[in-house]
Length: 327
Image (cartoon, rainbow, N blue to C red; front, side, top):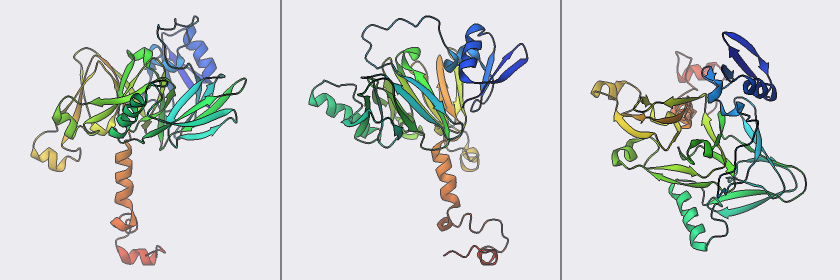
């Protein structure tokens, strides 16, 4: 269960369960909040998870996405449990499901399902967009066909945090790295975002194509390690390692810049380029990109002469002496 801590005028309150944290934050939002996974204390007004308006906001005209409830479980290896009313649906990447209620049915579809009821060409175009981002041609729709409440859970693929984001709070559009999408309310469009500048596309870390999430529903994005949210003022610039960019609002300008001179490129260890994010808008950053984690694991693999010979001045002979005798 997620435990929250609140701070008002230097006085800390907690640990609190989620319901109590929401109640206190709603009663007094002029403070700061922290939970495991936050890099620092964040103003309560900027923490979407603690927002609980007394009067539900009006439903925008032309709403397409289903409204779903959820809870996020865990700290380092999280999963999200989505609660569905009869007839409601959630869409997820193939293979992301952890468990579900018997009354929740599964259906494999082309694309993201946002063009349900459209022509065959619409569905093929939606599926084609996913192929361009390197994702599977198919997605899975989970629909509650019974009575009462139904539940379906989706697990994160590697250590990190799951971010619940309401697209209606971000102008109806978010740009994210292509591997970060986990699941969403049915009706959210999961498309492609082309980098306008060829240099950014070639060396921007995520390639020429990123994912574009559009609509007014709830989406869940997964990020590695600790996640930090930054609000960039108009013209404010942030330099970030290209792999650490999780998502950003459509108002944020994304470009790349060379790290520096030849010495920095060869010996700096930070790559040749870094991302330049320029406000206004919000950005989400991760401390542990999967590419970095995979690179360390590959470097330590026995076939790469990594961990098997580390820790011994005798090298391979040390492996024989300390019992590491696998070949």
